[in-house]
Length: 180
Image (cartoon, rainbow, N blue to C red; front, side, top):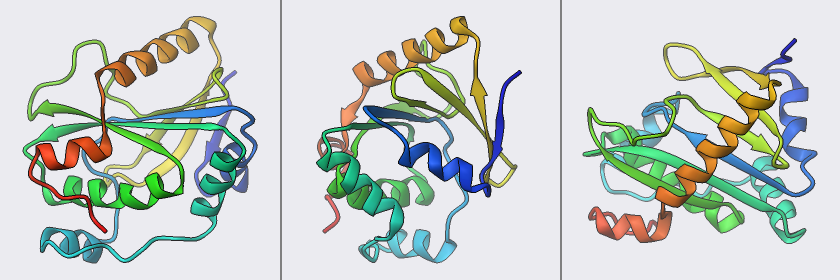
């Protein structure tokens, strides 16, 4: 039976602290719950305040230990204010050691061969799909346990990675400058 962990459960955060080699994250949603004020700041062309704290400390620790931290976000174009906020927020995760990449796609279209759900792959073989409420707030993660399903998620991760553009290269191509 698949294990489900509530996003509020400390065991969810421990999944990321415990990685030994790598993680991969696919982001397919076009909107997650976020601070509306931060979205407005970016929409007005202002830089986000620097983000720091336990998540960024963990990223730096993993990167310093040589662990691979990969994230791919499928991004519909043209961007809405939320996606512009997301792109700006990646400044701090990339600075902390995460390799963030973007798969641009026209609005209303979807990249062939990629799913429409978010997931994590931890240490190449632990797969967790993410469950959200209607406002994009993370509710839980559900572990994928079937070998065929795990292989499919690994395939999707490889497909997304090949299709993705590095974050820093993507920004100027769409008229956004890398936030400082």
